Length: 418
Image (cartoon, rainbow, N blue to C red):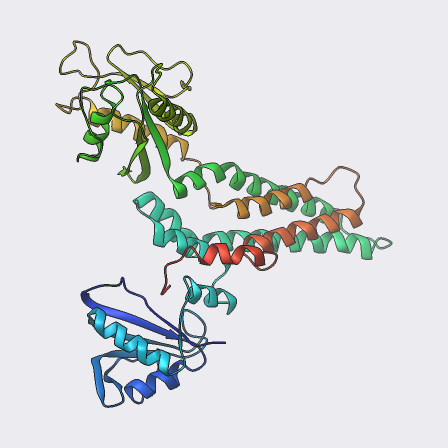
């Protein structure tokens, strides 16, 4: 196994830079730079040198194998936050036989060395990507092992149920208490119910992780771009009295009461012979149709029949110019109220969110659920085999088996240095 290194703080100028070193030769390499580091988990102020050349003076701390984030020997260098310092240190680490880490390689090694299961690694990836409080709450829960604990608890119940079924097979000729079968059935029903509950909450949990899209649709000059600018509180979209100004989909991502929401400004919907504008309208209709919610905006309060879905909002724009208008991007009238309404609608949609946030996890649970759909009158031998299949699927949820093809996808999403 190579010894790897990477800068764990964002590159560039700052107060400090942290460079992490992990692998079998981490301590040897670090002591070649900084001198003896006798006690693990103690910070030492050291001069880091490349021969006679001083690179920097900083804090150095080492961790023993088995007691670090990666499970390997790890050394962290806390240096002054100057890019040249980091660059000189990396050159020296290269010369001593270490190599620069790939994206997510530290976390990948932690997973391979049993320092975390796959659901915790996925939760950590989500935590690093979290932009809102709701996303943070969801990610911190799974990074702390909530889904692992849930799956482990269910597997223990399956083990108990499997033991009861096995007893009925192995001691079929002996007198066994009648309540053994009753207990086994009750355990299987409980496991099924809890899996069904998590699968029901999967769409909402995934939506929290990936975010919502809200499309603003309507005819040209309805005030769509002005509304987007008002939501963003900056000039994102170009606003002119010329029809067809917006031709591509413009996006603004906001934190709406803890929910990640991307608002889409779309081309004005109308019949046109302009080829480019027509392409923009087609793109607008496609994105709007796929969005989670649409704001139908016009001066008259009409809505697009093709794009209307139950739960959409229909608003009259330009309330500063038109009597009876609902919203004005110029004065701000109604903007806060509309955002509050959208937040309430989306919050209701995610109220059932559970622990399962990824298709990989949901697919494994669906296999477990199918295996536990035990028909009445099924032989004890087949029931025992179905329990084994369900237990195996739960092991897949936490990444113990059957996820080799998925690992590169997971860990490539991490930044370098994590």
